[in-house]
Amino acid sequence: MLELSHVHKVYRVGAFGGARLRAVRDVNLTVEPGEVVSLIGESGSGKSTIGKMVLGLTGVSSGQILFEGNDVSRIRGFSAKKEYYRRVQGVFQDPFSSFNPIFKADRVFEMIRSSYFPATSDADWRQKVLDAIGTVRLDPGNVLDKYPHQLSGGQLQRLLIARALLLDIKLLVADEIISMLDASTRIDVLNLLADLKERGLGILFVTHDLSLGNYVSDRSVILRKGAIAEMGPTRAVFENPMHPYSRHLLSCVPQLHRTWTEVDEELAANPPEDVVLPTVGEDDDSAPLTEVEKGHFVGIDQH
Amino acid sequence: MTLRVNDLKVYYQTLRGDVHALDGVNFDLADGEIMGLAGESGCGKSTLGKSLIRLDGRMRHVDGTIELDGENVPIADDRAMNRFRYHEISLIPQYAMSALNPTRKIGRMINELLRSRGVRPADVAEELDRRLELVGLDPDVLKRFPIELSGGMKQRVVMVMATLLDPSLLIADEATSALDVSTQRSVVESMVEFRDRGYVKSMIFVTHDISLVYQMADTVMVMYAGRIAEKAPASTIINDPQHPYTKMLIGALPEVGTTTEDTRLEGIPGTPPGLLHPPTGCRFKDRCPIASEECSQTPPLVEIEPGHWAACWKTGR
Image (cartoon, rainbow over all chains, first blue to last red; front, top):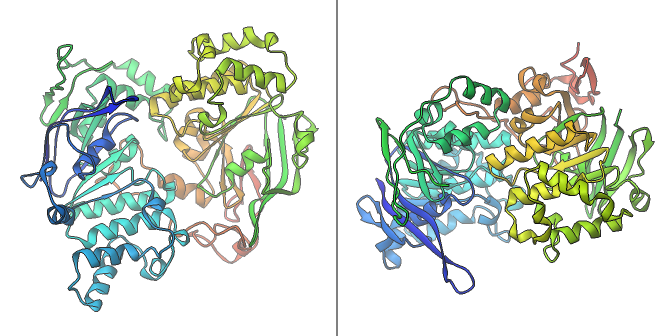
C-alpha cells in the first residue's frame, strides 16, 4: 500500500544554507493494509522526517514514496491533496497543540465535515461521529461539547484518532503519539491502534521507545542517522537483533524485570554471533540492506 | 537518617483556591539511599522535589517539617534556605540547558556559581577536573559554550556542577527523560557511581519511568494525587507491589518482549482527581477495583513489612 523506495532527505542547514544535513538516507520500506510498522530511532535518526514526507509535509530530496501506486511527492493541486488526505492522516506527539484552545474540542469533527462531507445530513453525521468516538473507546458524554483544557491528553489524542477515522483512511501516521501520555492511559491508545489494525488500517508508528514499538507492531524498523540499521518482523528484531547498533540499543533500554547488569551478564555469557554487514564506499550515499533470514534485514554500520 | 519529611503539605495558590499538590507526605531517606519517586503527571512528585530546595512564588508551605541530617530545613523561609542550597541540597533539572547560562562559557559559569555560594573556585578546580574525567568528559568542556555540547554532555556537566560541594541530598527531577536511551543509561550509571563514591549522600530521582527507576534506585516511592501510595525496595515495588494503584500501574507497562498478540495489557480507567477540591478518603478509590466502604476514610501510610510502606486499607493486615 505504502512503499518507500530509495528515499533520501537532505536539509540545507547553516547560516546561508551552505551546509547539508542528511536526515534520511536511502530508506526502503513498505506498509501493508492491516499492518503496524514501527519506526524506532533515537533523536536525529530521521524517523519523524520519514513520517512528514509520507504526509506530504516536507518534500523528498530523491527517491519515491508510492501510496497505492501514486507518487506522493507529485500530488499537485488542492483537490488532489485533499483526496490524498482522505486516505492518509497523521496524529502527532502533542495533543494539546493540535487543538485550538479557543474552540471546543469537537470542532475538529466539524472541520472534517465542512471540508469532506458537506452533503451529509445532521443526523447521519452525528451518528458517524458517535461511531468514531465509540471506536476509540471514549464516552461521548465525557468528551463532546468540552474545551481542550477540560480533557486529558489521552482523551484528546483519541479524539484526534477518531477525527482521522471519520475519513475513510487507509494509512495512519502516528508520530510519537503516546510519548506525552501517562503510563496508565498510554496503553489504552496502544490497544486502540491494535484494534484499528485488525480493521485493516495500515499504521506507521513512529517512536523512540523500544518497548512501545515492540508491543504494538508487526514489523520494526530501527533507524540510525537516517539509514535503516535493522528491519524485520518485530519478534525477530527484538529477540534476535543482528545489527550491533540494535543490540546496543536494546541493552540500554530500562526493563521492568531485568536490570542492566543482568542484561549485560547474559550478553557476555552467550555472545551473539556476528553477521556480515553490508558496506559502502566513502562517498556512496546509498544504504544497502542484507537479508540475514527471511524478511529480516540488516543495514550498514555507521559511526 | 539523612532526610526525614513529616506530614509535608504544600499548596499552590490559584485564583480559584488552593491546589493541594502535596497533602501530608511522610517518608525517610537513609544515608546512601537512592530513592526513585514515581507517579503520573500531576501526582505531586515534582512539587515534592522542588519544595525540598525552593518554593516558588505560587507555592505555599502549609504544614509539616523537613529534617536533613538532624537539622530542621526552613523551606518556607527563602533567605534562610540559602545556607542549604547547593552546599547541602542540590538539584539537577530536567532540561540541562535551562540550568546553563547560554552566554557564558561553562568554566566561567561554574566559577560564578561557586563564588555566589561563598566558595573559592581555585579550591575545587582540581576536583572539578577529576570529576569531569570520571563522567567521561574532557576538562576542555569548561572552555566551551553550552550550545557546543550534546544533550548527554550537558546533563553530565550539570551533574558534576550540582554535586561539586558534596551535598547531602541531590534531587534529580526527570534528569534523564529528555535523553536518548543509550545516553540515558550512561548518565544514570554515572549518578549511581557518584553515590558510591560518596559525592552525594543520598538522592531522590524523580521520574515517570518506573522501569528506569528499577535500574538504579534502592527504593521506590509511588505517589498518587498528592499523597504517597507505596514505598518499598525497588525489587519489591516491581515484583510484589501491594497498593492497587502500583499494581495497576506496573501492569500497564509494556516491556520489551510483550506484544498485543500474547496479552493485552490494561490501562487504569478514569483520571486522577483534581486537587483543587480533592476527594475525601482514599484518593484512588474512584478508579480502584477493590474499593469498598472503608475507603471513604483516608488510609494511613503503614509499614506492612520492614521497609515496605503502603497507604491502603486492603494491605497490611
